[in-house]
Amino acid sequence: MRQKILKKPAPRSTLRSELVSKILGQIFSGELPGGGRLIEEEVAEKLGVSRTPVREALGELASIGVIQLRPNHGAMVRPFGPAQLIEIYHVRRILEVEATRMAAENIEPHVLNDFREQTQELLAQDDRSPEWTETALALDQQFHELLSRSSGSERLAEEIGKYRNLVVAVGNAVGNKLHAHDQNMSEHTAIIDHILARRANEAAAGMGRHIDRGANTAAEWLRLVYEGREPTAAGTARHGKT
Image (cartoon, rainbow, N blue to C red):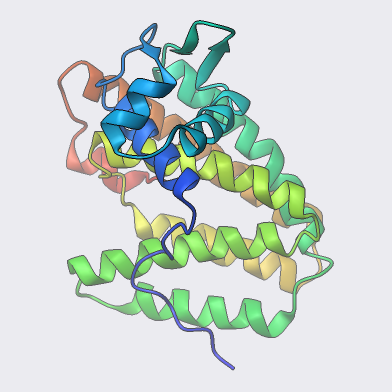
């Protein structure tokens, strides 16, 4: 049965995840600058929630290195810029390359063929409307989630989700304009073809190149945004957030 493309990624279900996203947005937009303090009680009051989910959210943010927890001093926002973004992508690359290699042994061919067909249908469309973009973004997220889940390791999939959420939060904070979807989908197709041909190592290498390209472009975009400038449309068209 063909899997339906969601127009938007499924909403996060837990309050903790929602708080993580909100705090990340404030950090990456500069509202919470590096070195700034996050006091649990103040955050809870500002966001209109109890302290328990805030404590859980801060713990998750600390586990991925975005903030530093200090006993009796609350949390401190770590400096964030292009170098830190590259580090996030580097960790994500390590995780997703291995997940892709593992998924190649587990994933059902008909599921991959379904994703491939949907990808090619999108690429064949001439109208790049906002609805087309939303569909492309949703398919992108579903593709990466499919591979991480199919790795067979729940912990690996969970860690990948954390770092991917970081990348999404950065994109939302700076305008989310890195939409070279054609290249992303072409690279996804190549990864799918390697898996279908039982070439796990080639598929993993393709995922590594896919994430490397996104890392370099996103870091350059973030640098220009912080400087009050934006890349040219041509530069964006050559690359994309993934």
